[in-house]
Image 1 (cartoon, one colour):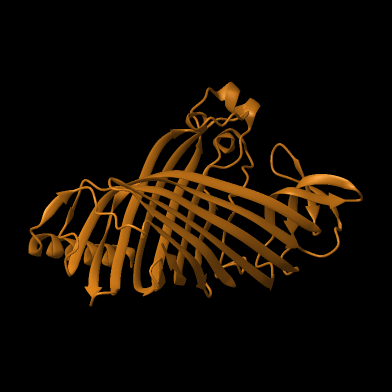
Image 2: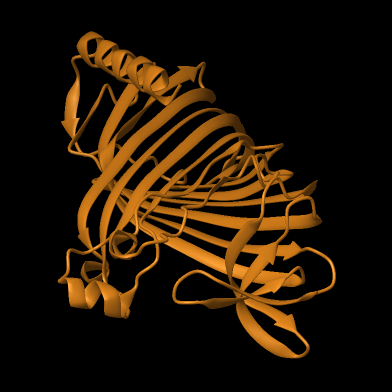
Amino acid sequence: MNRSWCRIAVAAALGVLIALPSWAGGRKVEKGKRMRLMVSVGEGSPIEGGVEETFRPVNELRENPDSPESYTFAELGLDESDETLGLKLEYQWKWVTLFIDGTYLDATATMAAPDDLFIGVEEVFFEGQKFEYQQIPQGTVYDGEIDLLALNTRFGITPWHVNAGGNTEFVPWFVVGLFTLAGQFEVDAGPAQGVILYEFPPREYVVGGRSEGEAAAVAPEIGLGGEVTWRLGERARLTWQSNYTLFEFAGSTSDFGVSSRNEKDIDLDYKAFDTELFFELPMGNRSHFVAGIEFRRVEIDALSEAQDRAVEEVLERREKFNKDIDFSIESVLVNVGLRW
């Protein structure tokens, strides 16, 4: 879907560029219209993806290797947010535009475990003792909740604009930015029933109980974007704004400044697309009322693998499985706010 939207945006931008020959450096900043602040509201946003264990180096050296595990958000019942809320800020200079988008999503589910689930968590307690792993036996009914906060901080660098002040204006930009995703989840699988040993080397898993966990991801962004503005008479105007960004990385966890006992090789592929149509109407001499609709999609595919090591190191470290992680969020938002 995002590829189709991207093709439409690129075709429209090229059409405007060809039709409007009046060029100038940077963008024309209108006095009293530098800042746009909007509140975003949406209903259920699809959450797709999951975690799949693929290969464990130590398994090749064992007679009874562990079996890989996998799960998807759909299997956990967390495949759609209950609500989506956001806040958008835009501030214009001649050569640079600042964009800050913050989005909050939450999802809840009550369902029976389709299989024995083994989860790494921040904390789960049994008889007053804290553990970091939880098992939910097959058929156990549990309540799950996940809260996600996504933050985009971007700079749009505009080398030139077309037909400033005309009935139709085109402003392109190169995008550089940073995408941050932070999440917190809770799983309530009833009273903790005991502790079992699982994996090699053995780890202590609490059977049932209430657990909490956190996760975070950060990805730089580069890409293209722009806006087309149509002036509807002397006062009102309609603007279509779109961005397409991406980031690819192949390296190790140490490249991110992450220090851990077992350094991992990371292969990351990030893509994001957003498009927004909004209408502006002046309210007196100082501010404009702004309302619009926006579509966003973010995709993250990551592969975490153990590094090649000597047999002695593989036996000593006994690292866990390599993991293939994919994640995507798709949102449709209604935006309302002011420009001044």
